[in-house]
Image 1 (cartoon, one colour):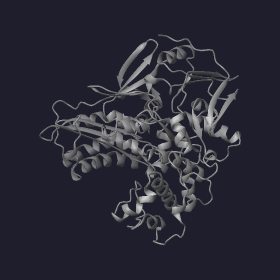
Image 2 (tube, rainbow, N blue to C red):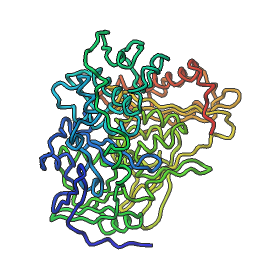
Image 3 (spheres, rainbow, N blue to C red):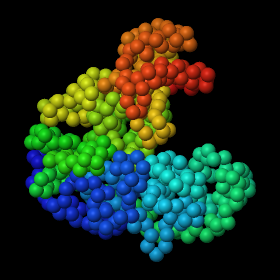
Amino acid sequence: MTHSPETPNTQLRLTINGEVVQLQNISPSLTLLQYLQQSGRTGTKEGCGDGDCGACTVAIIGEDANGNPCYQAVNSCLIPLGAVAGREVVTVEGLAKDRLHPVQAAMVKTGGSQCGYCTPGFIMSMFAAYYDGKLDDAAVEGNLCRCTGYLPIRRAAQLAISSASGVANGAANEAANGSTNSSINDSEKIVTYTTANEFLNKTENGVLNTLDYESVDLFDSESDPFRQRLTAVTADLRSISYSTDQQQFYRPTELNHVLALLQQHPEATLVAGATDLGLEMSHHRRAFPVLISLEAVSDLKQIRRTEAGVEIGAAVPLSQIEANLHGVFPSLDEMLHWFAARQVRNRATIGGNIGTASPIGDLPPVLLALDAEVELVSAQGHRVMPLANFFKGYRQTDLQSSELIRAVHIPTQITPSATRRFSQSYKVGKRGTDDISIVAAAFTVDLDAADQIVHARLAYGGVAATPVRAVQVEQMLIGQPWSWPTIQQVKPSLQAAFTPLTDLRGTADYRRMLIGNLLEKFFVEINENQRINQAVHY
């Protein structure tokens, strides 16, 4: 069935803190943060405008990996207003009515705020995680604090999640058995405790804090207004055609409608999660004449498993890939763990990450090493091509006019003569999380029963104008034993295969060193960490 583009209307409708807001003649590419501040909701702060610091974090009601309503922390500095049409947005102003929300109370009780500028963002990240039971370090990895220090903030997270899971009343018994019931990875070496309150009162130096943490005012789960909202509200992602004097914004729900719009507006800009495009809106105040949102197109948001492999729709958020495909592709798991932060993964899509053709994109090396294919579609038909042929130059792809990425296909079958496969990915940046790669790499090798290499893929980002494989070195490895001498034999050729640049993140020599060292690391981790006994069998 074909669709003709609709007649644009002049209103966007969304809900902010339970209040329905109707917007007229306002730019759909104005960021949510810009609108919040212009409308007097100044609790949400702007720090970097890049989605790095988390000061702008708000929560929206979206869907989890099982399709159930959930709160998702997102960066409001990157989301255009059009993307939240039909959605419910919760800001820090909406948390405290007659009393503090438990995450706010926990932050107060643990002394987790000093200057306070970053606090609303931390609160909203913790708020979203509070309701999905994942209030761990990863929940706030996209939030930066420059004055308080992270220990009291992490203690606040521990207190809040303990309260939410009912541990506040029974933690003493669990603690007596040596269980913290905490997903916090405590690098500060908090000592063993005998009661929950003793644990929470311990500081980095072992000095007791006299605050009464057990006095945090908790919501009863049955009367929690925010939990009730999850059962009463779902995102209304109906088809939208919205226009102002200068812009048009479309949010179709069917792929055929998207293709028809692209024929009518070949100059249109496609947007899904807007984590990359949002930078243009946030920093450069760029207003796109025609925007077509893909996030309501159901065909682009499916993950399908077949006998040959996995098909991932181009508009599937990375957080859903992370949840739905965990354990299927270890190298993908590893890279998603280091991919930006939860706020970004809740919005960023696999199609967007490869469609931008960034030479330092995190996912392309992984997908190249897994022999992924990309499916492209237009009104004239569709085609499937190896991802290795998709990148044509710096920020250039093989996408033709009026064509879009429909899906990414990842095979799960290993080489017929192989008995096991090893695959892993690596990311080197200036920070451990929420940072851009200096070099990213992904490797896949298939071994036969005699430990001979029968298949090899060595893929890199940050070493050339595009994500790229070391094809000649891959061929050199075929038929060779999986051994340290083999790695050393091909290392010089591998380092000579690329001509990396020097920039603010690293020198060419440093990148060249990483090219060889990461392959060595791959070998050592498999062998010395006995991963040879944990091979992936598809």
